[in-house]
Length: 228
View 1 (tube, one colour):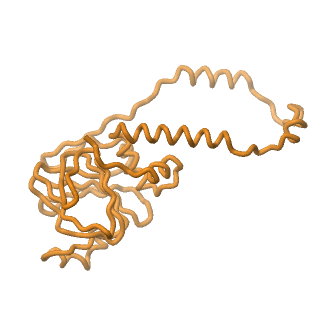
View 2: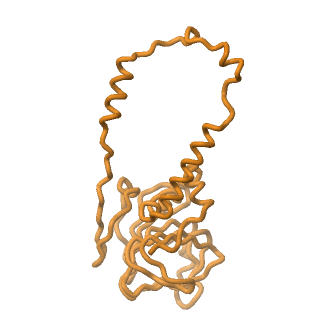
View 3: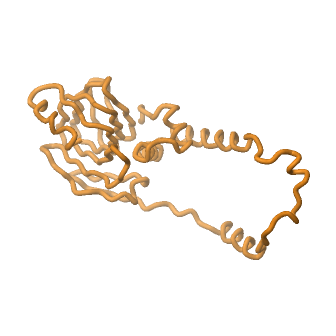
């Protein structure tokens, strides 16, 4: 059961189209998995449509009263319009193909929002594997992250923000247990050490490097901007 969702402000910005592209991508991927957020997005979309129709008209009443079809300096091709309407009524919704990816011994389904996004080669570091998505969005990095069974990420905080969407498996940290579909947004106010018993695959968006806080992993902090 999905327990962690984007908040209302994020979903509204998603519907309004004001999120950064990478953030919109990961929110869209969560919505695909989450019936609760699908309903929220549906409601917000309807509200946005109603607000658009309730907006002030471009023309004043005087303009509309004086308007005449004779003022329009173009011709309608009614046959073409009728053909387009007929074609639209017979159209069939095309559902994007489901894609599966295997890394180590884990096979998982790619969110449909990622179908057209190219993936770079997996980079392996012990029980952690990462495949950067070829998705240009200023300083944001978007990646697939696989942690093998009984693996963990060293204790760290965040210089910027990090959004994690769990696509397969589960993991836990000092703040709780997370399962498939959970959406987690962390920043410099959070310090944690994610660990997984069964293994997991995540979609992540990061705006800056991790900052390791304990043990020998702190030696990697000077290289943080290259490895996040």
